[in-house]
Image: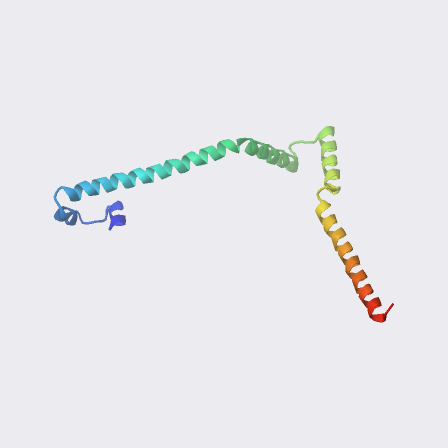
Length: 134
């Protein structure tokens, strides 16, 4: 019944029949609170969205300028000068090489696996020699 009241699909005579003063008073109070809560939620969502867009404004401008630059180059409306060509070559060269620090955990895992295999192989060989009596 409360949801129907917020949509204004209810029978007012039932509320008036329950109590002449308390029924309409409770209904008005309920409607006021529902409207207040819904409006508060709406404003908080809008406020949060504005705050989020304000925080990301710098990133959005950088992304937009990058996209515009790529589109102009792709469409042929803007020709690259010598420094931009060199910068693009440098970027491609840097992307081909890897940073040794990024691969360090993988290399450590490989080293530990190799040491573990050597240790297990030596234990197997030792147990085989002990069984042979050497």
